Structure formats: structure tokens, C-alpha cells
Length: 235
Image (tube, rainbow, N blue to C red; front, side):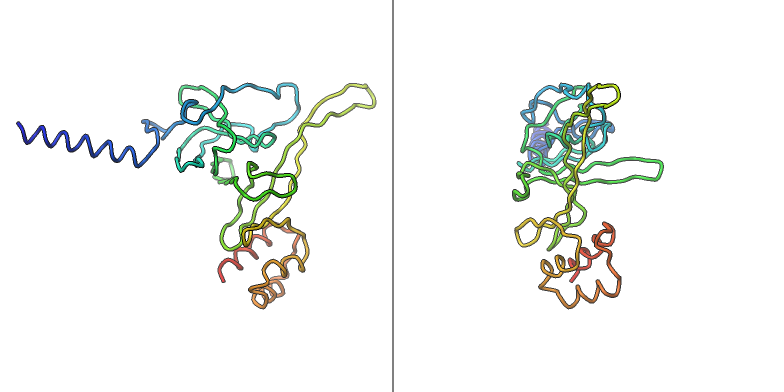
């Protein structure tokens, strides 16, 4: 009996240690580990955009996501969406409660979108150096990482429109996108020209120039620029 009691105490201690190392809230079912307002110093959700045409979010509907907090905690299969006006994450718990995660608390959100064409994964990351009035709180879509990290900023703003025929005013979301490269600890706004890439990838100038020439890179084509950066990162 004594041996069984000692075994039970040992197993319970082991479970506690593993739970502390995991540092997530474990639940059963498809929701994986869930976030609650108390866990992330969040606040209750309120819809501020009811009278505005369009969506403030990267994807308008909640999608299953993996969320990495800046303190190292990770949450899997959380229903969430990314607000690109405020640059903050909104989530929904398994109980249906909606809330915002405190600004600056999310370092990475990886979103899974199931479409008729297949499953698409989108990763957004914050914490990059300030550039073009964008602070470290801004989220960038990450295309590839390595010596050079290829990023896109997607910023949404609210603008008022006047219908010249009816005189009616309306509000809608406007989207502005720009490409960036994070390299050598600095952010560089992409210029869609060969000279720009030759300058920032100068440590591998010969190989990069040969790749550009052989593949006839069109610097206005995102896919071709992505392949160029992936090639550079492989050197």
C-alpha cells in the first residue's frame, strides 16, 4: 500500500512538472489550448466598425490559429483574427467569449485558412524595428526567414467617401501594402529594381547577379522576389 501511495505521489508530481513546462491551458477536443481574458490581460470585444464598409481584419472570419505570446507561451488551434487597423489579435474561446489580446503581447500569429483551392497558411510577426511610422507593435506578413527575412506590411485605415450624385457620405476601409526586407538587424523598404537587391545582398553579389540574369527576375513579381530571397538564404 505504501509503495502504491509513493507511486501515485510521484506520478502527480511528474504531471505538475510537465504542465509547468508546457505553460499552456490544455483542453480536450478540437480547440486544443485555449486563451481566456485573464491569461492575456485582454479586454472584452466590442464592434467599433459596424457602420464601415469592408473589414478591419486580414481575414474577416475567425480562423484556427497558433498564437505565440512575447513571454514564450504558445496556444494552439485558437479561433482568432488579426485587426490590421489596430494591429492587435481578437480571439474567441471555446465558450464563445470574444476578446482582444493586450497590444504587444502577441509576437507571432499563424493563421490556417481552408479554401476550395486547399489549405493556406499565413504567418504574421511583430517586434521588428520602427520604419515608415510603423512601430514594433505592427504585424508584418512573413514570406521567408533567414539571413534576409521577406515581409509585407498590410495596413488598413478608415476613410470617408462622398457620393457626388447623392451627397451621401460613407466610410470604408482602405488597404495599403508595402514590401520590406529585414537584414543585418535593419528594416529596408523594397524598391522594385535590380540595384536595390544588389546593394542589400552585396555579400553574395556574384551569385545573386548570376541568379537574377539566369532567371530574368521581374522585381515587380512577388513570387520571383520570394524565390530570389530564398536563393540568397540558401547560400
